[in-house]
Length: 250
Length: 281
Image 1 (tube, rainbow over the protein chains, first blue to last red):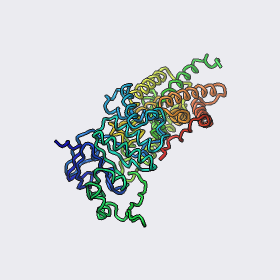
Image 2 (cartoon, helix red, strand yellow):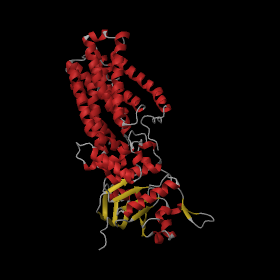
Image 3 (cartoon, rainbow over the protein chains, first blue to last red):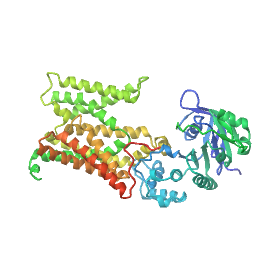
Image 4 (cartoon, each protein chain N blue to C red):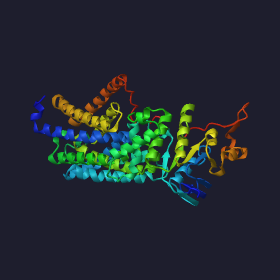
């Protein structure tokens, strides 16, 4: 019997009130699958992640989410001057499961330490979060989502600003987490990272295409509709690249 | 050193600054990290008309300050809803209006003598009721911060993701503002309308430079606030300067001393703390 989908979206339109910010979204995420959300800045990637989290108003269509979702935001959005240790940040994932009058105790800190172990950062548990490298910070935020016992991980531009070895390490970790049966959704600008996923969903206000990367990314029309004029041919390489977006966070 | 302690007015003043230092220092760390320093200053100025009315009516200042701060909060919320008026502008308009109203009342013929103590505080004139309210403030702040610590930490760390972790940043903000308002209403009696903000910002800003963890930072801020408060009272006693102003100036001096101390700390192997309130991105 095929596994029940973790997320099913059909004809989904959602927004912040007023006109929908995204529309026509249609995809299925099975356990163990990775889905890349590809699109320009302001194209609706983060909006779709927020819709999956249930933070936005659904205007049309259906969206079924059958697992707990853990968010892994861009680390630049966290305050790096904040007086918290790596263990403190991982422990934040336990708060939702506690009644409001209870503080995280030994049990919760042990769970956080196990999650840090899982992402290879147990030795840095006592370090200040803001002093870690970008790749390490991303791992801490993944650990925080793991502590939430999330069946689906929603990663927003996880490779942004990482050097190649850090990216490769993070990619391997994401692969392992998917291998354990989690669903992974990655918002990204990077065509190469998207190629490594099981599915690619191209979005620019509306869904342009969704399917296996070999099909979706081979269609230049899809990429043009997704990115408009921001695609450039790389001379001599035969490859294509997307002009780097401005780094405004939305 | 012990001579001032023989004086009953000094004993009361010391008890007052110790209690306010503990509450203001600990709460101040959250004020600084939530970037509420401007809000703290605004709230303290906006209660001036309430203080003057209480002085005219001859009732405890708390009875005038509490409704005034609630009125100011509502007025700010309403003004911020007007199209084209952002929150900062709304705060500035409401605070200026409230403070101006307070000055008009203070200059009226009905105004009792010694009204300037509302602006600069009268820490040597604290009553048993003032001490009781300061002690209640310490209990409230300690209990609330203990219960809310983890949630405040999450909402301040990354507001965008807080909701997915089960935390509402708006509720965290509101809880902090209520605590801050309570702190200002109580502390304004000793430190005055213009100087009260010092105890909520100065020690916390200094502690920020001396620790990388919230709980030690809160303990350091409380200790520095108490130290500065006691130092300020001694300064006032021997130099015959105004009590509230002396405490405020000592707090500034403590902050100034924290600058070389944090450099020394950095040289000893800790990397230097980022400047207060700055998001590195």
